[in-house]
Length: 484
Image (cartoon, rainbow, N blue to C red; front, side):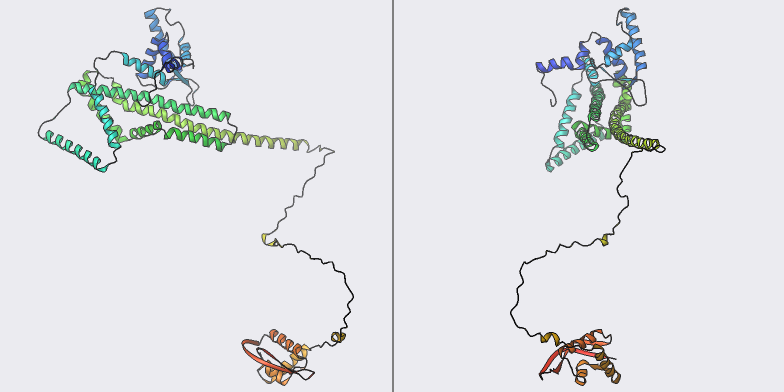
């Protein structure tokens, strides 16, 4: 078997000391506990009962037993028994407080239900069907083989074989050869259905217990956690993902999706009504609750879903509590500051000095910030000055010439009075340069300042002048045209 554990001496010894079902079977009050819990919880599929109702039912049970077996039988009060059965030392009942209720409620633990159902299987059965279980096992193997077949040809061949079988069965029915299950086969399959339906209800308690264990672990981590909320939430969400992604979580989710389908519920209701009405089944007087067993599955599944919802609510309360504590601390600090300020309003301290930094803000626009400039590195050469011995003519310092710019502008204006435009070369022919290159540079400066002057660099013209020594010099410059 897949998940069976080797029943070694050590394993059995540990189970005998720690497993609640084993303790229940060894208990002196086992007949009282098992019969009472089976009648209250398992037969009606009850998963939640208030303490007052359960105590009243137990008192009635104890009264009936004392009437039949004697007053010394089970001398304790009903509430004492319930507290003992729900104690961790026994672990037969789960005692809890549902939301918005001050009264404790009780439910069976999965271990107790396992022990009770095992004892129920020990009773003698008048009919033990084997064919239906063999067919169930065969169908399961067939599903596994078909679901894992990767060869398309084999899958298609298997589907065609099933289609041929269906076609042959249709032909037999059309020919009047209608094959029916006999009474034994009907009882065999119905017994198999009842057993699997009850096992399914029992398994729900164990699934719910696993989710409840996760919830308890989360509460313990929240109480002992001293780090940040993000790390704790990440750790908890990873644990939730582990549960939902496990085989148990996937199987439960698939079962819940199947059961929540309204069409499936209607189909189950119709099938149960049809089967329960068959004469061989009706003669066996089955439990009438089997007609609504799918609603019992639904109710059991809701308990499991509710446990998961409580886990989410626990996380929400943790975040709210953290935020509330932080806000409370801030409010306390503000209240303390206000109280101190009110006390010193009329009687400020005499020797009280406090330095405050400048509270004015220095606003600087981004574009006002200067760009970074690397500092200049000054190069200092430490040389000593020496007296020169060369004889230089200082006449050049006193032979400088001055070009009268206004006179040149007047000359230009007189020329433009006589004609609408004149080039610089033509103007210098009538008014030759008196100071050489220096005067020519002043003419170019006047040309650049005149708004109606055009300088064409594509054309060139030559200008000549004669120096004081009689030398003829020539310069090539762009074509300059003065316009009136």
